[in-house]
Image (cartoon, rainbow, N blue to C red; front, side):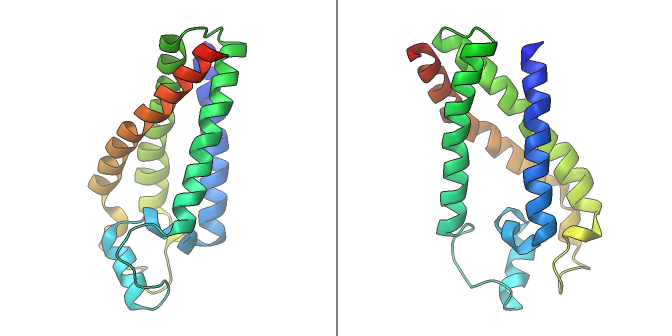
Length: 161
């Protein structure tokens, strides 16, 4: 039960963060957009031309969020879930990670992003790539893999605390 409550809280916080950043300025999240949209933004001069998908600032921002996730979840799982072993910390954190990841792919990406005009970047509004469901599912699978080392770290810290 605690994992479900923690997942719902995580979903709420994740939604507030992603939706507010994207609505404020969709270009802030352009690294998470399908490749054709990113390329069009470069052609239009809306973002700098680059080889990498994410800027250093993007990587730094995501890295800080990941570190915060690791430490916050280790403490929360220890205090509220009674996770006192590596396995319990890893299992619970990865389950929460998966729930948020799937919510992101199915609700935020496949429903909101693919259908909302508010996330469209000027000059790219008519691109079919906004409805590239396969891209979002593929990104979710990558997210599932990225969660493994983070949740392994949560498990290790949980066992140490």
